[in-house]
Amino acid sequence: MLIYPAIDIMNGKVVRLYQGDYGKVKQYAPTCLEAAQDFASQGAKYLHAVDLDGAKAGRAVNACTVKEIIAKTALKLEIGGGIRSERQIAEYLEAGAQRVVLGTIAVRDFGFVREMAKKYPDRIAVGVDARNGRVAVSGWRETTEIDSLAFCKQLAEAGVENIIYTDISRDGTLSGADPEIYRKLVQIKGFKVSASGGITTLEEIDCLKTMGVHAAVLGKAVYEGRLSLAEAVRRAEE
Image (cartoon, rainbow, N blue to C red; front, side):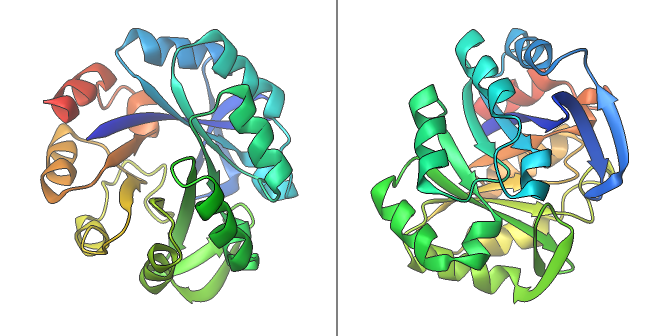
């Protein structure tokens, strides 16, 4: 299993939200680049970055910060937040991003995501953000009536190879991930599942790995010192 420490970017700074609430923000690290370099020094090989301003605005806002991380570290970076066009996808990929994460656009224009998944099969992931089992969009501010599990099945049928499933109610809470949803997700044939939201202990890392989850995204637990990133990477790679 792979470990992706997370950098959520707001106004060019590293932050964490509580349950996706833009009004409940805590800032970490002097700069995004320093946070990324610190993760690399602890053994991380991958990085999950989210442009929170972009997710809210519907366009890439912190692209310069993301490109700086790509240029100045060896981390394989996936980036999401406000990506709504092939032009922006291509810009990030040409800058050296490992892959691009599509979110709101997957709900608003499913045909576009199907097309991009075929054109960039291993370079596209879809971020499925769920609140009470329903898909949330627009920087988590709007919850739709779309069942998140059913939506994941549709994505697999459309040829999407990677999903990043975030339980918003657990994100930033240090309450632990919900193993049941990931047990269901890994049964869907056709794509790799990344778990995100609330992961706090090494035991959860072990559990997710055992059930066949492809990657785990770690955030607040690492920033707050509740979880050793170096140990998480070691356990995941064993």
